Length: 158
Image (cartoon, rainbow, N blue to C red; front, side, top):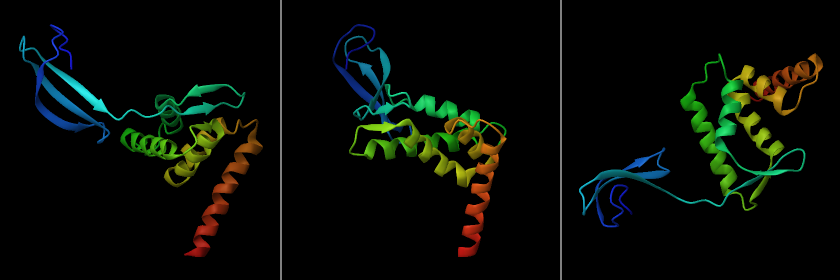
């Protein structure tokens, strides 16, 4: 690891700890040449996932973009930011575990909707309205009816 102060490559690790929910390691280092202290992070390098958009374009999966969409959908609900970060983390892990390195944006949307359905009906409908491109009130009514139908099915199973 190269020292940011003197560019020497010899350093010693003073402290290591898990960071980013265990997905990376934070190391506090000290340069053996100039005694400058600095922090490095190690994380597993993953193969990038391509997201196939509705128009056929491809872009690299961006967890921040997903987090922004979820944050907007969950505004003024009981779902806090930590819960959303865990949700995004779990979805990213599911996507990374797939053998195919490409996934459609509509499939990501379906995965998100599955998770939101059990967390918050309001967030579910908000996210669905963007994901499914609602055009009018009838689309909202259909989404609400699907929630009621699912709850009725669950109640009859219990």
